[in-house]
Image (cartoon, rainbow, N blue to C red):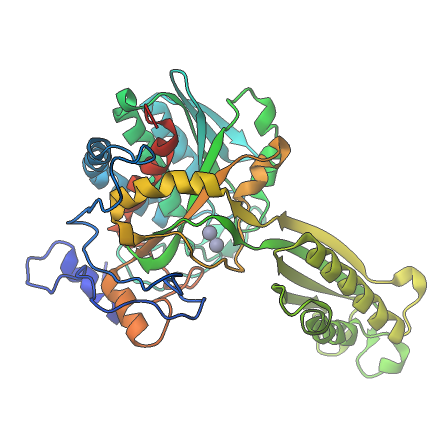
Amino acid sequence: MAINFGEKYQHLIHRRGCNCVQPDARTFPDEPLVDGSRRGFLASVAGGSLVLMTDAYTSRSVSADSTDPAILPTQLIAKVNGAIDSDTARLVEIFKDLHQHPELAFTETRTAGVVTKNLRELGFEVTERIAKTGVVGVLKNGPGPTAWLRADMDCNAVRETTGLPWAATQPQRLADGSEVDVMHACGHDAHVTWMLGVAKAMINLKDEWSGTLVVYAQPAEEIGLGARAMAEDGLWERGFPKPDYAFSYHAVPGPIGFVANSPGVRMAGTDQLDVTFKGVGGHGSAPELTIDPVVMAAQAVLNYQTIISRNIDPQASAVVSVGSIVAGRDNNVIPETATLKLNLRWFDEAVRDKMIRRIDEISRGVAIGAGVEEKEMPTRVMKGYAGPLVNDAALVDRVNPSLKALLGADKVIADFPAVMGSEDFQEAFRPLGKIPYSFALIGVAPLEMFRKARAAGRSFPYANHNPDFFVDLDAIPVGARVGTTMVLSILAKGA
Ligand SMILES: [Zn+2]
Ligand SMILES: [Zn+2]
């Protein structure tokens, strides 16, 4: 197979397998990477600048006070590194395999099979097919707290353009026989791989901790339904040990070796909803005999944009986006209906309620203006939902000193700004009330690439969901180390 590397992947050719002399792509720059915009990956670190000083791989500096009981002992951190180092080759193979076999929401059967097989081999008690493809693995190891660690499994309907040797090339055949290009453009393949690395490391380090570890693979994060579907499929009635703490993470195109684990609100709440306008269809040449739903939909799209600008407190953050307009088929036929597919983002339930109320009022107003009868007013269907992701401050405080001991004090960002992106991780725990959780962002981009992007004025070298998104193989052991350290922060003896 001819391998067509894009220019930005040239460094990967040299870093894998050949012996030619290359400048070390992991040499850290000496300039501060703070842009103060509150938007960039390493933006606006409060109370001082953030300077990248050391290589995360060669100098695992312990600059935090190692006598602090919150920090895992240096020897244990070394054991974590050893356990993951000896497992890295296997994990990279698992990752490449998952990457080449992406599966869309609720169809992650092959991925779930990989998870099940690996966890069973390790001795986890495994339950499959929760919400179709969800997998839960339980490892009891004496008295102590219970920590849950989650990885999401689904991919995106994106055609991969990385040209990497392990790129996904096959479309996925859907139940209706149609085919769609698919790709892990959000790094969920890495999330699963990291979790399997954590599972094995925790088996190897069994003497170092006491309690219960539950690792689980969740379907359908991308459509915001998987976590809730697991809860609705009896996740909490199946006898699994309930979590005292929960953990998860997400791949981001920040530099490898960096983790953002910050307290408080991290991600926005989100809704996906469809609004359908019902008109009167007819011939395109005789619009006077119709009520055109396409025109109503077009007006509504524009009017919805006034919700953020005119109805929401300018100091609150919220988004209304229309991602799809579905109406008609032929050039000369005015259709019966037009459906708008909307996505909302918000941090405050009151803002959410107001957005939904205004969507209803605007939709209805447009329909009345078009002469639609009362019984044919627009309908709204609520689909995916997730509340805001809010990290537990005390748990973050407990985990971060150990992450600093693992990665270096300057590589753990505790005041990363909240983003408008969303997660459904927390929705699995909603029926249990308040479970403290910590959700970390893990850098997966080669530092040199990140640095070049910053020099060119861009926040990131590439973005999640883009066809050129990729997880550098060097990020595979890092994510596994981070995940292991997070759960050990709770489960380690004496922690
Ligand atoms: Zn995504
Ligand atoms: Zn994602």
